[in-house]
Length: 256
Ligand code: ADP
Ligand code: MG
Image (cartoon, rainbow, N blue to C red; front, side, top):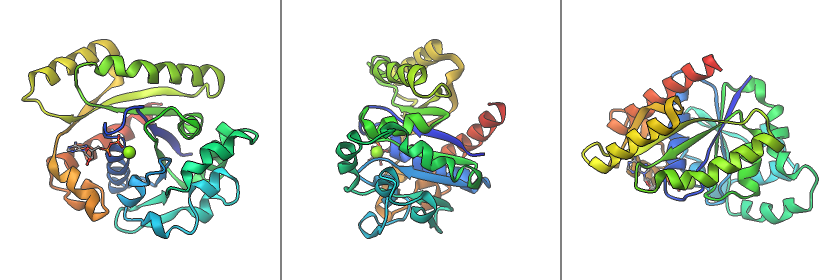
């Protein structure tokens, strides 16, 4: 049975997509069967997995509107080693169309139930908002991975997300929990980042992953080649950190 994780943070540009595609590639590299679900109409995780969003005949949009199943829509990225349930701009319309439909926040959950036996991990890249799309992700998931930069106000920025997760846990998905906070774009030379990192550990304890993703230009270059950094340049520091994180996730789900 697949374990399902949302990569979420209501802020944009914090490293959600980078985390999703590199964790997916890292997990595939260590032998896990992975489905990556792109829930962001920008389609960056799709493109960053070597799948051209403009060429998609079917996308996650069709799955949410129940006009296609995941098996019909997902494509295998040969280069990356995982399946991709892609997204493109069409998905931004789903937000409005879902409002009138029954079980609108549980559409993805129902669709994923059909393929639960096909994968070890499902990773969902969420848009930078607490929208109906993100809600579909949170309703489907066993846990949330929260990438965050160790900046001033980092803790305050988490409040909305933590409250949303609590509400979804109470009303819609009793399985849901924060699996962990992932420190990303980390630069240990910056004293403030070290201080915020310590604050995070003080506040969230073992909910802070041991793995730390450094700021690494190779991770930022990889998307322009349509690849996760882990595939584009496996030797890069950032790529190695993501493979280490993949191993940490494998250990965590054994303990779940
Ligand atoms: P989000 O999905 O939260 O909007 P992205 O994953 O797209 O964030 O990251 C935002 C920008 O930061 C992108 O240009 C990405 O390439 C870059 N980036 C993300 N993580 C790193 C990192 N560890 N080192 C350097 N650049 C990074
Ligand atoms: Mg993104």
